[in-house]
Image 1 (cartoon, rainbow, N blue to C red):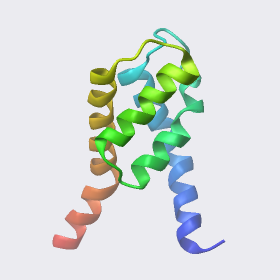
Image 2 (tube, rainbow, N blue to C red):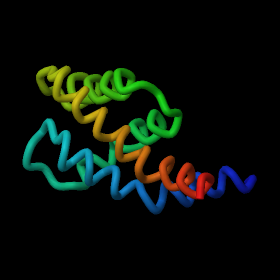
Image 3 (tube, rainbow, N blue to C red):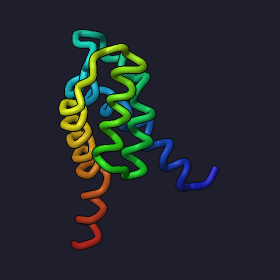
Length: 104
């Protein structure tokens, strides 16, 4: 396994619980379920955030999971609001520190 792939894997192991917590705290379409319910959805969301896709693409995935997988009613505005917060988390967690270090 190359160094970059190993670093990505380590980052996933370290921060996936944080993403799962964010899905539970910010999104939670089922409401009132145990935290581990959202572990099933974090890999797809992580992949999109890692690929730096648009807020609309992340919201689309949240909507797809909400409707097709969970069986809840659509909430496009809510999904977009959460997608925006998740992208902001990704930026502040992974991108900003690197930009800051490069400029200091």
